[in-house]
Image 1 (cartoon, helix red, strand yellow):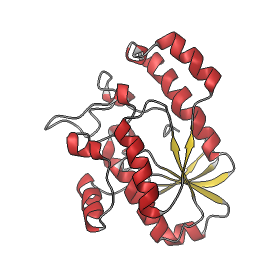
Image 2 (cartoon, one colour):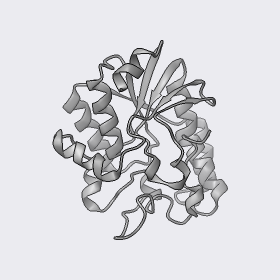
Image 3 (spheres, helix red, strand yellow):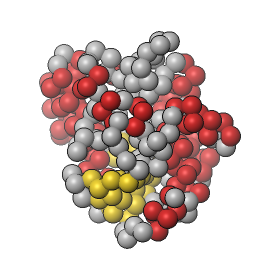
Image 4 (spheres, one colour):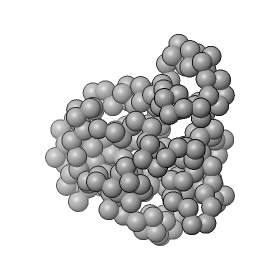
Length: 215
């Protein structure tokens, strides 16, 4: 199915890699589907866990690919850090969204500029804010096709695929993490908690998006 979809895309294709289990599956599927010329990119927020940076290198070595890093605008980041300090993003939803915008949303706009399609590892079961996603959508904000090849997969199916194909995994998942973001805004989850409970854990579930996947 993904091979057929990719053959219909006329233009450059990008795949976002954010150090999640879903992303390694999406990358593996895309490469096996023949997407040899895609740009694989990561948003380097400058707040990643050390394990994510190690995983970045491991995935590049495993596939023999280069994952391009997009970093925040330096002047915008300087102003943000003076305003919020180390943990000011936890003081209000507005602060957190401003931090995400500068560290993630603005760099994503640069990453997707000139692209015809964007492959993600989004799953509908990840959260209430993602329950309606489709395998193929048109993203009006970025004016491109958004391809979510594992949109209908369960978390168990993701881990089963990784195990069957011996894919590298972010070591944070062995320490209780089930979704990985920036270090100040992510924690491991407890038994019985939602998969994304560790993301922005001080916020209500309906707010738990950084702005990358909001239409």
